[in-house]
Length: 288
View 1: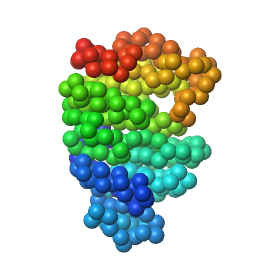
View 2 (view 1 turned 60 degrees about the vertical axis):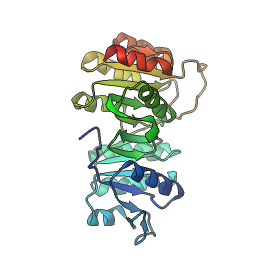
View 3 (view 1 turned 120 degrees about the vertical axis):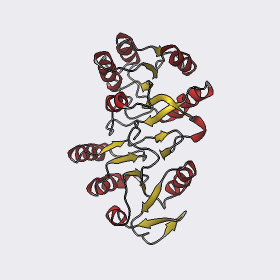
View 4 (view 1 turned 60 degrees about the horizontal axis):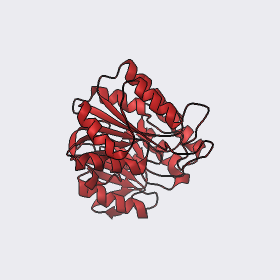
C-alpha cells in the first residue's frame, strides 16, 4: 500500500448528502476513488451516485468492508463523526472540515491515539495518490504519478506545489495536506517515518509555514536518520512579528516557529530551502 491509502482502499464518506459532500463525492468518484458507502444520520436508505447511504457508520460497516473515511460533516459534529468512525474500527480518516473547535480537535487526537487510528486534518485538502485514489479535494489537474512525495501544511500550496512539479515533468508518489489547525492528526515527522519505508517515494518536498514547531521537529529527524533527499519551502517569510497570519496553526511562540527558525533548522539538516515556489522543481532535480 502507498501512504495511508491506495487504489484498493474502500472509502466511506461521512456527510455525503451535504452540499459539499455531494460535490466532492462526485469529484472523488470521477478520479477513481473506491467509495463504497456514505453516512448521513436521518438519510439512511437513500443512494447518491449509486452509493448507498446509511444512518450510522456502524450500519455501513455491517454491510461493507471499509478501510478509510472522509469526513465532510459541519464543524460542530466532527468530534462525534470521528469518534463514530474510530469506534467502528476504521483505521484512517481524512477530516476535511474547517473551523473545528480546538477542544474537539484535542479529544479526537487523544481518542484516535488510544485506538491506533491514523488521520489527517482537520482543515486539510486531503490526500491523493496520483493515478490511484483521492480522499478530499486536491485538484486532479495539479498532479501526475511519480516518485516525489509532497507533504504540506498549507491547503492552497498543496495544489500549487504539485502543479509546479507536474509542469516540469516531476511526478508525485503522494500529495498530502496535513491540515492548518493547531491540533492535527499527523505531523510532518509522522508522514516522514512512513515515507522512509515507501518504495515508490524517492524524495520529499516539505511545504511548511510559520507557526508551531513541526518543521524544526522534522528537520531534527531528517538530520538524525531520514535516508531520502528532501527539499523544503516555508510560507510566511515576510510575515511581521507579533501578527497572527491566516491559519490557526500559524502562531509564533518565542524563537521557534519563525520562518528564520525553520529555514535554519532545515539548512542545518542539509535540506535546501526554496525561496519561491518556482525554485522547488530545479532543487528537486538537483538532489534526486
